[in-house]
Image: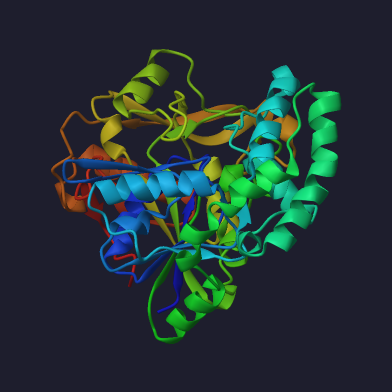
Length: 428
């Protein structure tokens, strides 16, 4: 079977972990293809809750091989902490495979991330300070350190020396911070090599051979479409490609082997960090969505900015990614509202925009144009078929589907693994 990509269709935190877990029993490999430990997935299995940051969600599914692809930036210390935490809870982590070509987050990248963000002040991007952006910058500047370099001390030392020639100048002369010694950085990175070695391989070859055997590969995106470095709300974006194109480059799987792209959207919208957000609510309704939906960052704990569903960005995500199916999560959070607003277009200086404005200034000044749909009061967490949903909830799903540019195949009606309504089989 060809590969399936799961893509966030808003600004992240849409519930990709649950969607991945839902498909987990039907797939053989789950691949994280971008980002690092700057985002998280929460997966609830029974009474157990798992918060994953760097690891693919498929690590929780027995029999599935989880893969960290070449498009990911890896903090080895964080990787080992997550593995140890899962091992302590009885989860088998021995199947994990890590690309030899994935880039490594060094301590100097974490330091640069933090001091640069502080230096920007009111112009800050809202990064997590975990060294993600500086590591991707090193990758593009061709001074990065890859996983495979940790197994050759001579190569590693040469790369660290080259990187620190510039970075120590920046740290000491611009930011008035202490620089790093080559020996200390090399010693730390070499200390990870022995434990990493059994996990490391050519993951592109591994996945290609799996597809040749007819096995199913699930590509799991970190962050989301509106945070994509090319297609998101730049500069308030992540440093990698979180769209379906990134799924190919970040895994080594060609686009001809991927025939399904599953976009994940919440029944409302959230965002973490800085940047424009047309439907953001600064009133009691925003607080209602935040508290009812437990909208706090898995990685940072930061409260998420909350707003109503935005059909404009859903249509944009459908187009940019080639979405074949949407998974609509957290429909249960909207229960108890008399009416539910949905943003269907933007007003920018008196001009209606049914699609994303072409420039950042217009998007920043966009005012949402709403349609109001009837609400429902019934508890829907026990619903397991579409027909069991209250009529107004059904109508909401149908209306959002018609506005979004692709069919809605799955609806989340609660946080638990089984609190899901499947309308169309995602693997069919």
